[in-house]
Amino acid sequence: LKINKMTSTTTLLPLDYYHLPFCFPDGNVVELDTQNLGQFLSGDRIQSSPYRLNMKVDMYCEQLCISNLGRGEQKGVSPNKMVRAIRKNYHNNWIVDNIPAASKVEDDTTVTTRYWQGFPVGFIASDTMKAYVHNHVNIEVQYHSVETEPDKARVVRFTIEPFSIKHDFEASADDDDDALEEGEAKPYKVADIQNPIESCNSKIGTREHTRYEMVYARGREPQPASGRVLFTYDVTWTENKQLHWASRWDVYLSMDNAIPAKVHWLSIANSLVIVIVLSAMISAILVRNLRRDFNRYNRLSTDEEKAEDMEEFGWKLVHADVFRPPSFSPLLMSVCCGTGAQLLCMSILTILFSAMGFLSPSNRGALIMAQLLLYVLMGSVAGYITSRLYKTFKGKSWQKATACVAFGFPGITFGLFVIMNIVALSQGSSDAVPPLTMFVLLFLWFGISTPLVFFGAYFGYKQEAIEFPVNTSSIPRQIPDQPWFMGLPFTLAVGGILPFGACFVELYFILASVWMDQYYYVFAFLLLVFAILVITAAEITVLFNYFQLCGENYHWWWRSFSTGGSTGIYVFLYSFVYFKQLEANSIATYVLYFGYMGLASLGLFLMTGFVGVTTCLIFNKTIFGSIKID
Image (cartoon, rainbow, N blue to C red):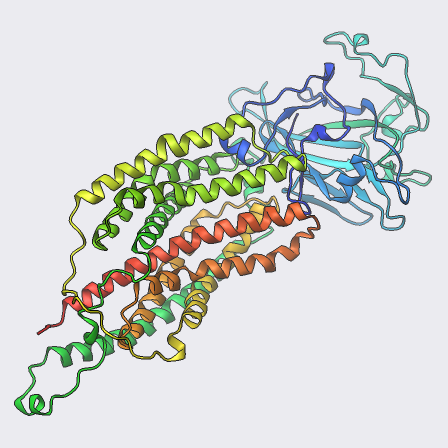
């Protein structure tokens, strides 16, 4: 039995299991499992435990150790570590044969089994409001016999039922480890229990496992989280003929069908309705208007019309200015598009690999590793896109543009990561990353990502600049006054709400998996929703871009980027709504949550902004390429 970090949805900061005064393994030596980069980054610390399990051997009220939890709870006195952890709602996460513990909770009428978030360290009594520690666990292990080799079996399910039992005990004389010889069947004994419950009474001939009725019998009390406490455990082995080893993770990934697939299908149906309505609107407005515009612009005017000198109007008027480089910082525009392209490629590939089943949660840390490595490898895409755009904008500081894309977004991310690491260290959390992992991250950034960015940029600058169907005049045209609904606030508000509306149900489940320690494994649904998000962002941006050109405003580069990217702003605003569920109360939690949510929203802003610019560029090239210009 291995032990992972303790997690809390109240503080969001994982703790090392041995940070609290639990029992240590024999010889007080804790062995850390070999872990990959993804596990270190997600705060996993898988360590050895003092619990001894033998295959198919039941154990009854086995004693672990006596631990002093510290001073009792009193007004005006700072509570001990254990009480603080219980009040912050910390949960234990244990592992047997790589499957996490499910937690079983009983009351007078029901038995509830949960397959996520582990089991609580203790509980707060509803009447006295005091903290009580779970000092006894029933470890229930189910196994499935191997078909080809009947004498061998595999673990397929692992459940913990925690109890709080106040044992009255005296430390026994054989409290040392030397009394136990190797292979001896004698139970490990550290204390003589004065008032044993049935399962702990060795004098009874036929022993039973600890049950809810024994623990809550009359005269029994739970164990307060203070003073000297005896830790005990039961082990029950049962054969499960139905559950095969290959499908043992299914119940975790589906979270025991807590969220039926119907919810995802309804969310996708809702998103598809948005896409279909938007597509119909775009085709109706754009196709009808563009056809009329093409007919008007391409028709040979008669002598009478020439004599009347009918005034031109509409988007054709800006043909000499529409492909003018952005008025504000062409370099920043290129860098934002390059970073957006890098994030977009990383996201698509990560979701694809996950949907194919390569990145299962049973392979801990695989998802973070995949994201990190794909992001690093997509550096060449960022370099290429940045350099192509910057060359098109006739920019001269090529090295500066390439350096900005190589160090800009990764620099912001790494800076925030260092701040979060300092916060985690100050709180004694296992989220704090070891120095060696920091060096690995820096190597990935400077040793692989940065050279790839320059490599991509080299090929981008070798290419010709993007060709436009119309020439740009030397003198910029004056832009007429624009109506209020073509202003930036309105386009940001409307441009982001439709893509966000198409994906917010899936976003809720993703946030639950990140912050609430739940499992997320419906990547096929996510792939669909991601495609819908990209299409919706592209369509709404093209629509606003057409209206803007009709209003003779040719500053569309930054406007299309911000209209597409405004989904990221909505996601950040939604994170405030979601935060209410977390019952957080410490400044460290606020910094951690809003820091990472801000970073995720910035990434989404850059990604959907790049989608917006790309679609508008293709659209503008197409419409200006299909009219005759005198």
